[in-house]
Amino acid sequence: MKVFAADLHVHTALSPCASEEMTPPAICRAALDAGLAMIGVCDHNSAGNVAAVQAAAAMLPGEELAVIAGIEITTVEEVHVAGLFPDAAAACGAAREAQESLPEVDGRDSRFGEQRLMDPEGAIIGAERKVLHMACALDLNACVALIKRYGGLAIAAHINRPSYSVISQLGVFPADAGFDAVEFAPMPYAPALGFDLKDLGLPVLESSDGHYLSDIGSRFCGLEMAEPSFEELVLAIRRSGGRRVRNA
Amino acid sequence: MKLIEIAEKLQLKNLTPEIKPDPVTDVQWGYASDLLSDVLAGASAGAVLVTIQVHMNVIAVAANVDLSAVVFASGRRPDETVIKRAVQEGIPLYGTEETTFDVAGKLYKLGLRGHRA
Image 1 (tube, one colour):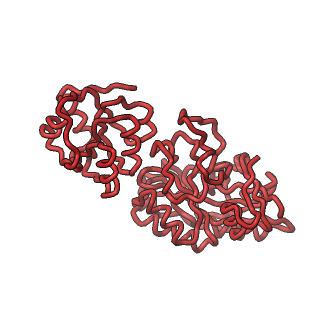
Image 2 (cartoon, one colour; image 1 turned 120 degrees about the vertical axis):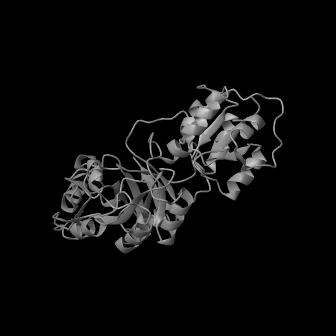
Image 3 (cartoon, each protein chain N blue to C red; image 1 turned 30 degrees about the horizontal axis):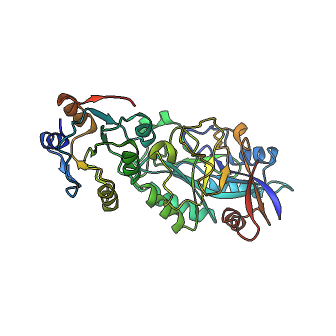
């Protein structure tokens, strides 16, 4: 077993709130510079740039970066749920279903930010037509079920965040929601809950929730596993076969 | 004002008729919020909560804060498992087509007031 540094929640320029500098090649370069062996690409309600980041990683000369296909779905309760999938097709399938209820972009939505679709070189090849900053019609349970149906891992995103987290929206952590892990993002929020958020009985993934290049790897976890792949990540999260998640 | 009178005056649909209404206690406080962390932190014991949040956790939070009832506004309705849990916990649930704004206004007119715990 080896320990691989992983930041499993990184946005691209597809997310309206992310910086335009978050192009596929720039993300891969920043991830390697931060010493990461694995990243997860999780844009809001879309997986349209996942394949481009994976292709950009494959073009890195002599260096290895595993790019896990992901999505960050906003549920009807306005809870952010990250999904990590075996491949880009699965992430896109889940994204398509999550997006069904979202309206098309009109002129007023540009103030929320651009939604850039990019190629592996970072050239803009289009724009996502659905409004990505809004909540989908899926409730939390339906969202977790959707992720599972596409073979994914469901992660309660940034549960230490005072907005858009399971804790902020639902007050207490629903133990039966079916999450595979909880994520901590780099922020000081410490709600007076009477219990430790790290003590929910689920693996804790430390991630950057990066929206800017300088965010990437600012918080990360160590994955003790045989190789940096989705299959091994699943084992680490399930604490199976000697694999596990180690936080800094 | 008793909960049962409030429900009558606002023509609320009783989603938990299994729960016997409390004939003694006057409801004094109201709270309107869809963020359950905010309800936990801010709502006072005995308050009526007006919300569009229908997740199961509404019941856990209502029991924790000791709310006197929950009113689901804007036609939102929790599913059966939520209603069942509310009956177990003894939390009366009501539904209305009116918006949170209108329900809160009518509760205020009946004498209920906002009150932060």
